[in-house]
Amino acid sequence: MFDTMTMTKIVGGLCSTLLIFLLGGWAAELIYHGSGGHYDEEQAYVIEVEGGDGEEVAEVVEVPFEELYAAATADAGEAVFRNCRACHAVEAGQNGTGPYLHGVVGRDVGAAQGFNYSGALSEAADVWTPENLNAFLEDPKGYAPGTSMSYNGLRDPEDRANLIAYLDSLDG
Image (cartoon, rainbow, N blue to C red):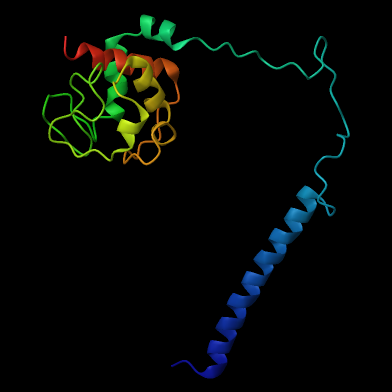
């Protein structure tokens, strides 16, 4: 069916196609970025904007957690809890991949009955206060290095405050 010459033509065609794509990519990179690789050169044309010097940076106002927590709602926190539902339960005594969260606000760290903790949490804090929960939920591995919690954390402080308000409302 196939002889050596046919196979040689097929392999040669594939190699030449690959070579064309590689050379095309190299040429496009050369055209787009230039030959020197200097990206910090001055722009050829600058559009001047009235009243702006380009150096203005928006000032970020950071609201203290206490104010966010005072304004937090449990209903909004229940929506945020969907991220946690895969590993945690809100019913007392029902541990999953993570411990149950019923009554977690104000509870001693590592005190969920029947859950085997990693030990890193008890070194980070004694009691799950709203402030401790906020710091832990922001960056679990940074707050308690060595924790077995694989979640990367909630970046939005309002979401964290709402979630903590929801967890606080569970036990009345």
